[in-house]
Image 1: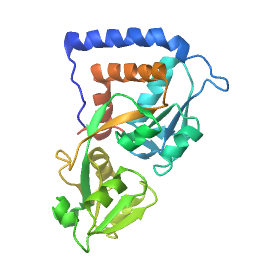
Image 2 (image 1 turned 135 degrees about the vertical axis):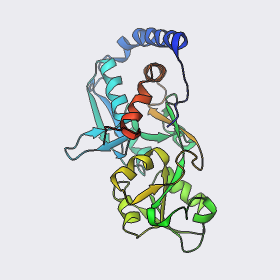
Image 3 (image 1 turned 135 degrees about the horizontal axis):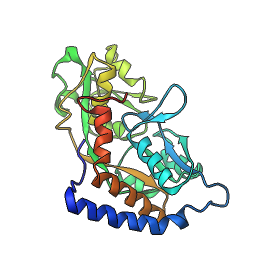
Length: 267
């Protein structure tokens, strides 16, 4: 995980003060109840740790979950997570009246058609996950893009898009969710799954027979963002102000350390 900015000392303090003043000025208008509810609604697939994962009790945990909860607290509004899927995110975001979408969302031009984006709060990239018994056999795109290589990808998100674009010669299986897909690789029913390197670093802790290859040097690089409803510049400015303060104070980096750092405590 690499934060997009490093703002130590006085520079960070000045930015925090400026953004905080902007937020304070805008919050009274944004915090007013809408015609139906004052609840802040956040769409999330809830299957993409360490960003957002649904737990056994039906709640949500993760980096984006913590960010959303902090933002709701700043506004003084109750927060409701709205379950969606990656495949239906485009339609669900509007139809389910979501204010935000969270959960490890990548900055893609296709998503700008139905939502606006927050500032980038981190960067990530695609890296291969395979069984430890395979060694470094699937380290490169060329090694994966071969007939007979069984690639698996969860349906509807950037993992499917990446697989279709880069592995046309391989045998591609689309999996309905991002939760049980790792078991397919672990049980030898698929050879490799290419996903975000941050997720890979988290997942191999739960699946010790798996390994994520070169997570420090992924195949590509892209920003991670929160989606916000279109044509609401005041609300978008509030989201950006909040994220900027989290970045400047190192709070985002500390969240990732809790989930994927060497002494990670979240799980």
